[in-house]
Image (cartoon, rainbow, N blue to C red):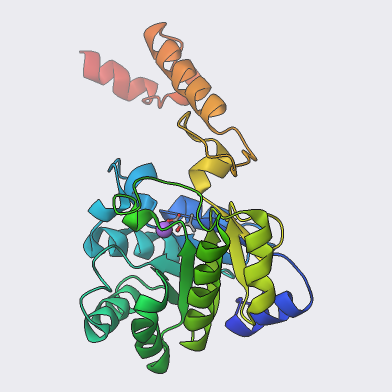
Length: 278
Ligand code: KIV
Ligand code: NA
């Protein structure tokens, strides 16, 4: 498949072809996302902090850590559009500071575009980035970088008033130049309502079936660990069971002496071996 473009995502929205996005955090998961022509976008989400680096919150992730991982994902990425989350704090100081950090993500991190969490309050930053040619994906609804301020990871936009505010935010981000918007953890009615009011593609996570696309975190979708799964997660594979079975089989085979066998060992020429023993 040819490289996915912003234009091809708009065409998919127009033709009602659901857009697919998966997260990746390293070279092998980057390769995996590129292994199927139906994956449109690979996102190096700042969920990297928790699922890959063992931090307790995305707010602990640094720009340096993100760049280290995006470079690896980029080496494994072919056709999907490659987008990275701007870590907490890297786009909040000023639009020019945000531009400086986004440029690092593009030049050192080798990504095609960046994703920013927030509403109207970051519209000027989104406008600045898009004006200088940096593709920006917006992110509204549940904003994990603000989980302390929001008192936890909760469904957003349940009331008509909060929903209306979110629609206004999404429209402001579109107007500021965002090429797409992630909508996280909102009632399915609101996922559809926002999608109908925008011209850019919406990509939902816990936003129901009415958005233009769907995204899931790699580890949730592939079942790499037993941790808490949100209501909106569907596990499409169980990588944990074969992985743990493999670890146990290796450890058992070493312990009982059955690994390595003769076929798995090098041998010396007989003459040389005799000479050595003399
Ligand atoms: O960090 C992340 O993985 C994300 C997606 C879930 C949208 O932002
Ligand atoms: Na994120």
